[in-house]
Image (cartoon, rainbow, N blue to C red; front, side, top):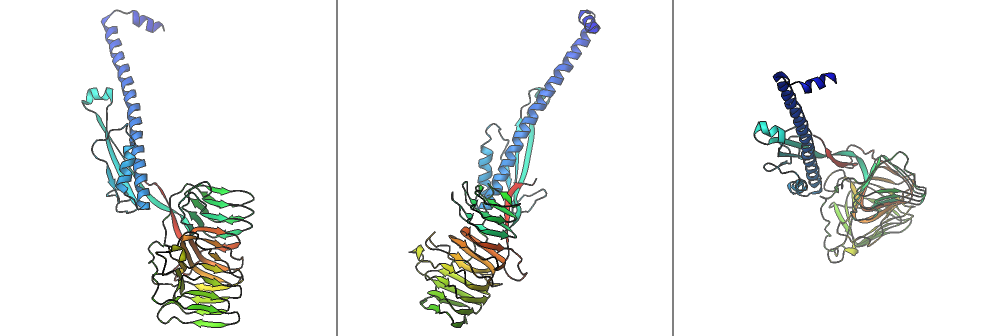
Length: 419
């Protein structure tokens, strides 16, 4: 303090020069600190803009929308930043670690930063850039997918049901109960994933199952399947009484029936079996088997009357021992209901006795399917894709599929920043 008082009171030229130099130094330090803070804040805003645009573009890429439109819309939300030139939006990126990857979206933005102190010396605004890359990455394997998209319950496990899955369950449903585990039911799965929320209430239990609410919409793994067509003159009804035995031939590879009401022992030759409007029913006494078969439930009136589609009923006492084709358009699928069917125009129930064997996919994209099951069923290679899925019995579903089965679990995806 004594030194400072002496310095202030000093009137010599040396002291004046010293004070002036110290003042400039302090002003410079303050100006540089101010510019640094402003630069950091602007850079952070610009990076957030690039990150948000890349994420939005990648989500549009997964949902079939316009990557450029989605990214630009996100960029436009940041009105506080004026960009220099047009942003770079690439799918796939032309540079970087994910160059050429069609799943990745790269965004680069450039802006001028007016820094008051630095601009005195630079004579112009400083230029800053930010770039980001986002893409859909794997998020586990799933064997149950509900395609429902509205505010509804896509997957429900209720009553005293036990669903043990060596894979995950996912739904595109929204709302607070997109997946609901209720009653005294128990779910053991690798994960439960939903666009909406996941509700576990009552005495429902999920153990160590991972919960992934508010996730990305998952694509239909079988969206490219051909639309079913009914051959002309398909009016024959296949009915097998109890204690009767029938071997069903399929010499052309495609057979069509107006209905199947099966109560006896039936063996189907490999091939495609079309149900025209009438249901596929397996009663309690039925013993049905087939290797390399697919049952397609549709109707020749479905365009004018979507409710005319065939439905499915497999009684709990029935033995249903089938495997899907291993090649061709329907590889890996053994039950397929026309996607043009009216929602809830019928009931689709799948069960079976302890000696039942199912290998492949049950695909009902337009309607609900209720899977009652039985703890002794062999469902080591079973996938279920439907508009809504409900479990009410003791079900054990895994995905230990033979390498040449044509069937298998499907990957879930989430969008995140990768660079």
